[in-house]
Length: 247
Image (cartoon, rainbow, N blue to C red; front, side, top):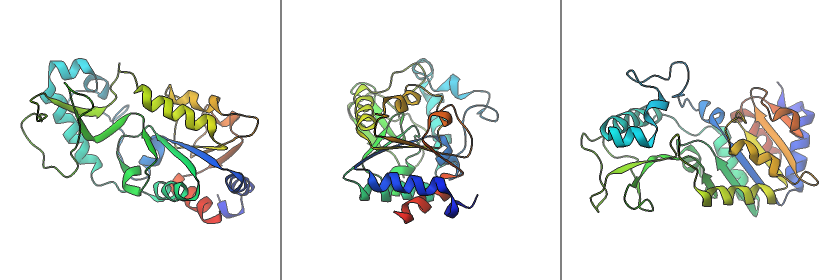
C-alpha cells in the first residue's frame, strides 16, 4: 500500500492535528515487527510445556525453579529485539500532546526502550521481578547475568516475574488509569492488537463517540475493524512513522 497517497492517512493526520488528548493501545503485532517471538499457540512449546502450563500462580507455587528457567529462556529470546519505527513514532507522538497515554498489552519493554514514559504496562514487564511477600517491591533485572539460584528479595522472600499470569486480575490502578485515558481522549490509536483479549478489548467501547476518533493500525482485520472510524492497513513500523512525520 502506498500510504503517502492514502485518504485514510490524511484523515488520521487531520484527527491528530485537532486532538488535545490521545490514547494508544498496542498489542503483540507491534512487537512481532521487532522479531519478538510468540510464546503461545503453534510452535510455542518450551521443552514439553505450554505457556498456559507455566504462567500461573499454581505453577510457580509448585515449581518456581521451572518457571524461572522458562522466563530466563524467554528473556534470552527477547533480548535481541529492538524498538521498531512504530515504537519510536509513538514515543515521538507523546512529545507532541499535552495528554498522551500509551497502554500496552506487551511485556517486552520495547516501548520504554523507545522512550515512551506515560506508559501503562497492563500485563507487566518481563524484565522486572517483584517480591512475593511485598508485591510493591520491584526489581529491574535487565542486564543481569542468568543465575542458577532462585532470585530473592533482600527481605528473603522469593521474587517472581512481574507479569500478570493466567488466573490473575490486572492491577486495578493500571486499569483505572487506562480507562480514564480512553474516556478522555480525542483520538484512540489501536495498534497491532487482536482486539480479542479482555478487558483491553473493551476499551474502545469507552470512547466518547460523539467527538472522539478510533484509528486502527493493523496488518489484518480484527473484531474492532467495523467499529473503527479510520483503518490503516499495514505494519505499524511503516505507517506510524509516516503519520508522525505528516503532523
